[in-house]
Figure (cartoon, rainbow, N blue to C red):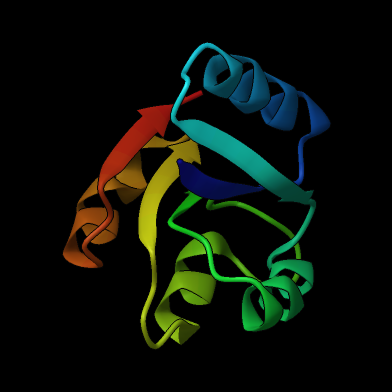
Length: 99
């Protein structure tokens, strides 16, 4: 089972990700967060295999958050903006999904 979390400031994005993951027998969304700061505490206590990560969020942007992780899990960027794709792949993300 792939344990995942979703970090996005849009509630609808969490619902879409959760619905897609329900279709897969091997991906479970363990928690959702509306900002990256909240996810930091969770990741300190609970390791995950995959993060669905938005880029454009208040306070701490998704890519800035990703840079703070010493040993990040696999990351799939979920963004409405394609102009961040190259930078994301330079940070070794697994995929980049446009909303």
